Image 1 (cartoon, rainbow, N blue to C red):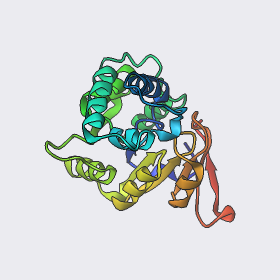
Image 2 (cartoon, helix red, strand yellow):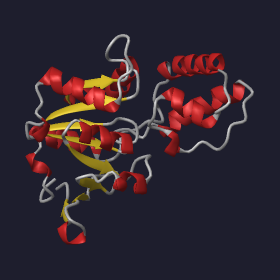
Image 3 (cartoon, rainbow, N blue to C red):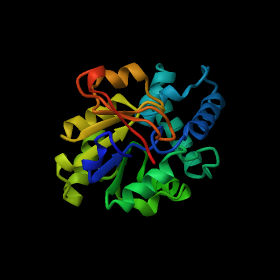
Image 4 (tube, rainbow, N blue to C red):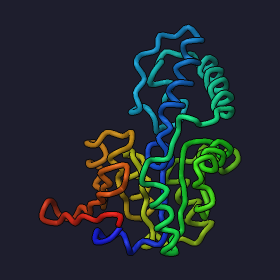
Length: 233
């Protein structure tokens, strides 16, 4: 990427689902199957549901579930997802080359995701992204606690000595953008992902990535007169 202002960042933080990996087909197929087996009416599941914690996703689909039923569905789904070969969860087209270019510049790469640690490690390894990472944090990275996105970022920054001014958070949800902003780092909205474009732009990200190939990265600075576009060469 050149000419858009991202060259200054040495530490890159990424969301996983909808940002690095198009995991929606595997997630929605397995989740829909579990819900139907439970005899629940399942609406058409779209990728826009992906991003929050699993419990919140299921509550959004089936708001009247009893707590015990929710716990059972979560347990069944997680067991099946852990056994999933991730055949339908490819990396987005521009991500492998992006990781190569950033690593070649000496940047450190991190992942912060609501997925559990064991599943995150296996999915990143399956897509060939794990060797590029300096670290990753998940919702279950601290025993006995459920970390928010901001909490994951704070944990990674503390563990790896990251200063906010050197860092940028890339994600496809408003939670990603707000988490990065709370951590004091720059933010880049992946508009090709699962989040709603309007909701992402309302958070006021510093950059937007228009396409999954990462050929168009735009800096937002003071409206149209302040737009600066960069491309991956």
